[in-house]
Image 1 (cartoon, rainbow, N blue to C red):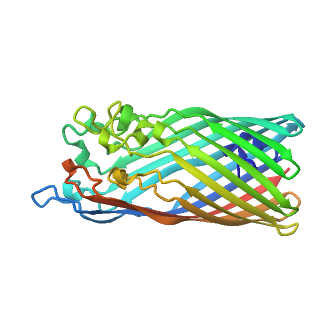
Image 2: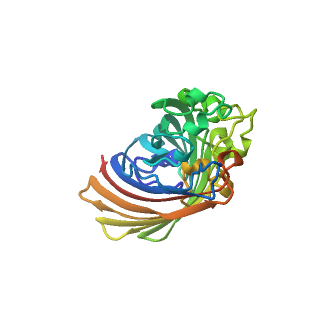
Image 3: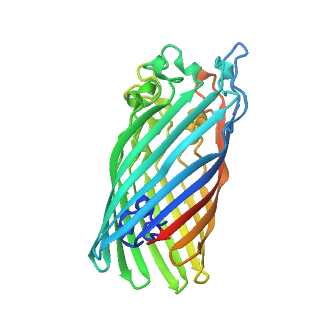
Length: 381
């Protein structure tokens, strides 16, 4: 899906204005997600033979099923409605051998973050060439972490009993997404979209995240264009910005850690992520009446600076380049099957000197690659 290139009933996840272009349809799908992630620590020495040095795999769990659902319906020539249910993001690391064993952690270190969006949408065709859309973003988050014993030492957290091992906590929030698509020429469409920040909080982990457990979902915005250079070819190009740095628990750097600003405090340390800028290019070719071929590539700026790799051993979201290929098979006048494969190329961010002196100094290197296989079924009413 593109900002100016709606394809199915899940279009509200990208641009709610697209709800007006997909007709009456239902889409149900599932994605099999396989990440491979880990870390390496070198040059660490806290004295007395205490060290974190070693290579660590975070693939204790490496397969995830992510379902999705979309529905759109045209009420009249000017008004359409829809509903999209999808996973917006998340992160999982599962170190069976904890990177913090040398500092006294007795068990494994495992972290899990899940985000589910339910987005009812409406689109209004203001003129024959311009459509405006709006969607509610109802967000449900789940988070758990264990195996952070070194961070519960006196003075490290504002609430040392709420750093880890508190089970699964949940958070619910509401935001909006607005969008526009305009037909500016017979073969050209432009689109734009913006989504608000969504407030979130994990009270069970108020000793880990800044702002006493604050964990908002960041705002994002983007623009897109689609072009049909020939009858059976369509190109889409998107540019998107995700404002990660505006969420303190995610964007604050580890250098914020001081005796008066420990973990969990109002302006405490976070993961140090920068805003992400993403460029996406997609190509669609209708081979014949039954088969449509698709391919895409996206490149994102690096969210994790070299200076922030130590804490991001827990969340090594460093991949930047994704390549996707897929197809749609029209099984009948009303039904179609789609499948795709996406590969996020392995990326390693090396962090020389990223470990603070109070943790024995040294380097922390983090890596990640991802593979996704998706299958969906669409029914046109």
